[in-house]
Image (tube, rainbow, N blue to C red):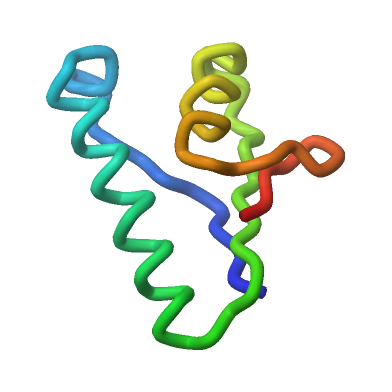
Length: 73
């Protein structure tokens, strides 16, 4: 299992379309990294408390499922 503690984009671009694309690229890079290491699961801790509803929608759209207060793929 791979665990991600933080995925961060610059605050100036986070709420723009460019920020969304950057976040998707970060998720894909982490997924690729985990695949290369034969990880069966990818756990993302979403504990920042910044826009939790938007964070939830983002990770669900990326294919993650909620496990407790975290997301796993």
